Length: 171
Image (cartoon, rainbow, N blue to C red; front, side, top):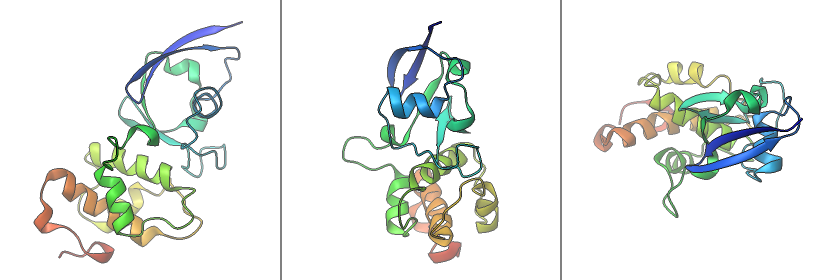
């Protein structure tokens, strides 16, 4: 039984036929739409490597059935930069060494973008760490990730002069 669904993925309307209602959004993105930036880590919703934004909200795509999101607006890591210009969160991750091996980085970045857009980051490093706790980093780049989220939030507000320094302390 084929089920047609329509998604807007990274600003592009896509009509996809689903041949199995159990197909996850993660598998649809990676295997059918060839958007492999979203990573398959644990495939159980525990690591956050598959985080995407669905209608602006953070979600583990390995736990989301594709058919349940018919009509949704999906943003993956491939849709974050504008041409050669990185998103402020991507820039902050680079500048604050918010990654090492890079496997978790797409999910971390998507979670950070969602966190900031939800206005949940605040200016407290502990609050950021708690809000990002669903995204695991095997390399332990957490200090850089926290700094990057705090810095990106300031950049996105346009308040560059008050940006956090290393480990979230005021500059």
